[in-house]
Image 1 (spheres, rainbow, N blue to C red):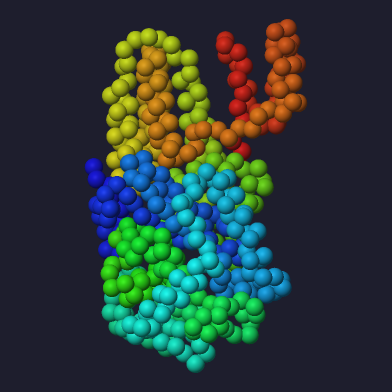
Image 2 (image 1 turned 45 degrees about the horizontal axis):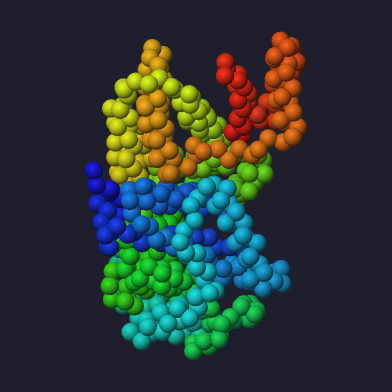
Length: 467
């Protein structure tokens, strides 16, 4: 089955065909580093990680660019309030973003360009648009894109331009789509900007948000590339404006496939400042919640469906991961040398897993294929011994799919000296048949999040996935 993605631009599933054979050029909208990233942001980043990892699983060489917006209206406002340069203001949030990526096991992109490091590219792009009479200068030194000169405006957001109220122009980067307005490519300096400006041929000023992504994506991926991702809130005006300014400048198609993930809800409500229900990843981690449980929760709902983030969903994710890891561990020591009996079962699971992800990254069906295999193998083991070859084949399959899911391997920290001593003391108590003392030590270790499992081969341990 060919891989198919739902393209926001055409509003239908389309077979994926990269521009260049074997190579996928992917642009994903990154963070605006004026605060810590919240779990709604990471819902998008996890979706993009799933996309990236599956494309690599399918044999593609992926070149991913994720921008870092380190200058915009909010950053300037907050940095000036704290009397800091934008560099000093944004660096802690930028560093925290990368630490959070690592905590959620999100694979790093090839490029993380910062807006402030690409001002010349933005100026060049704005100059091109002015030269083509697709942009004009206002009295305050700002440069605006002339929306009326781009006839395809509104195609991504599916807007009926004729029925919309036409305004003159808007300086803000984010605005509602009830009005169609010319948007700022370059913002002339004003007193509230303080020391945030660049001296250019347009005078003192700074870039608008939309021009940043066009300039940086084209620098690293070229004027025409394969996939552009983001959340549904980016469709308008941000991505709509990216298309208009990019295609007006180059005269060619900007992006072939536009993929957008739906909103994340918290207890069935959209996150908003008015409801005070923003949840930051760092808050969850500080509570001791296992990051793999968070990753699985954000991963396991199809990207085009709203995801309701709840404690119950976190608990269910932790149980799913535990079930997967316990099953994998149970495959150790299957030493029966005989011909494999489960090859067909494993092949079917692999086929179902891949065909599900081929269908617009249908992760829920893909996960169902995995847990169906676990159930069928466990039923088989009730009456048969698992052969060494079957066990190796199942482990190979699980390791293969974990290059996508990235939850199977544990990040268990080494035992502390105290914990090692407790386990050794319990082993001695068991050897001496001192069961009360052995049970007491087990309870002490369980309170520390360490689960002991006794078997004829000895005692093993694992850390509990906390939620």
